[in-house]
Amino acid sequence: MFRDEELTNLIDGDILNYPISYGVAGLIIENLKHSTIYSDDVLQWAKRTSPHAFPELRAVMRDWWQENKQFLKKKNYQAVRPGREVPKVGTADAVTPVPANPGRGQ
Picture 1: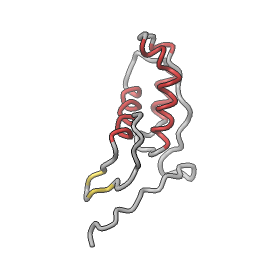
Picture 2 (picture 1 turned 90 degrees about the vertical axis):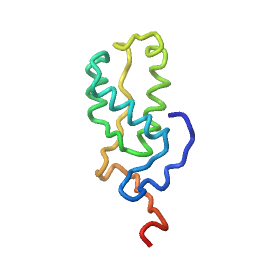
Picture 3 (picture 1 turned 60 degrees about the horizontal axis):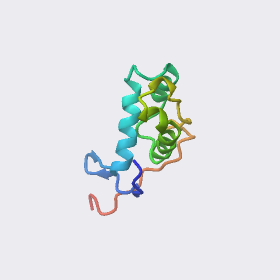
């Protein structure tokens, strides 16, 4: 999640193909949505957060990890706090365009 990778060429034919650092951020938020060891505040925050809100999600999850690292390392999961809100994909607040994939289908 802490790799500095560019978010380019997302669509490869029928496959959504994104760099690993973005995928890890999405996996973490998906895990939080289904975990019972965290507080309800964390669970509700995770449920409001799209795993596909690139690139905002990676930045939010990087900050979230730094803010909660001490609790996660000590397995004090109830002390973990939610992160900041990420704009919903497909809303006017979500400003991430999907990059074009030049050279495909030409």
